[in-house]
Amino acid sequence: MSHLQKNWSTMMLRAFIMIFIVSIFVREVRAEEFECKFRSGGYPFVTVRNGEGNEITYTVSLSNSDWTLGPFGYHATAVIECPGCTSGRFVRGLVWLSVLDEPPRQLGDAVSKSVIEGRSQMSLFAPYESAKPSGEEQVARVGSFVGCRRDYETFQKDGRASHDIVAVSANDGCGLINLWLETSPRTMDRSIADSVEQLLASIRITRSGG
Image (cartoon, rainbow, N blue to C red; front, side):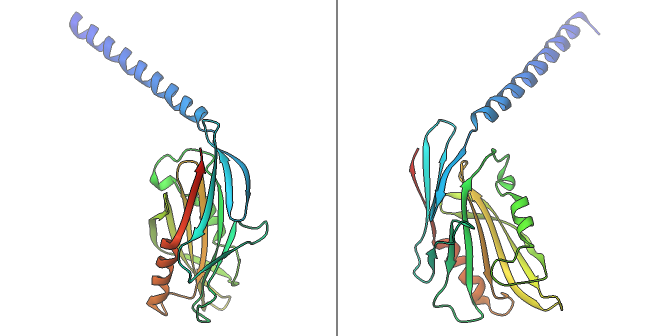
């Protein structure tokens, strides 16, 4: 190897090391700057503090009068109900507004999979024995929040279909919303799936402050 080639290799190695060190430093700075913190919450809002020290309040509402939003005690930010829905074709659910306490690495990480997968065994409205995912994860948008959606089928102890679940988690980089919707099995009636889409489209998140 010539002297020129050796010098070139040395320069390239030093440049690579410098880029590596700078990339680590940038990641550490970004992690330190990411300081979204929970401040307070209730029906139907949550207040967080962003990395700049400003407080932001997120408030959830519905733009479609087919559904109503109401308090649900300390269990969740709000409950969604459908007073006019036909019995057996309900669409109802829970809303949690919170804070994203770590930066999402990419779109697929915007949803907390541990939240969605963990809740697949919860029984909030209709009891069930087991649940299994239905279809693939989908990109979900709730107002200006972006994240992921996962659908589930649930079954009774004897194997009969109980109901369906739609789990959504989305964020705007600091605020976080988790949704847990329950419906009758959509295999029974296509209009049930359409109703879920209409409900998701009607959810509004208003941001103030910051």
